[in-house]
Length: 137
Image (tube, rainbow, N blue to C red; front, side, top):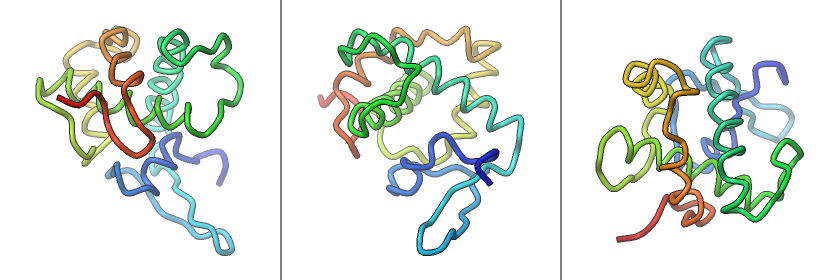
């Protein structure tokens, strides 16, 4: 199951985010989230890698390839997804209803995830509080 583990598992388990490709599994007493699609999971891993890279300065870290403290990781996840939602919908982000739909829309608009203007999402990452999205008005 580790091979198809959702990179946004913690956000989905927090109920702040949902994804139509997420499948909940139970491992003992723990709930885990797996992705139903290898291709979608690859896109999520790519997006998370890009968000981690562009957020280094905002989070005051030099190496985002290593495991980050929980709070910083959640800032990247919540803030990054909120920033993506704001970028695509030009509205104040709220709860993320479908991570897959956001990524599909981003790929349609920008061609690839690598073409996303991730630098525009950094302010949402910097302003994010664990469990809350983006800068407040």
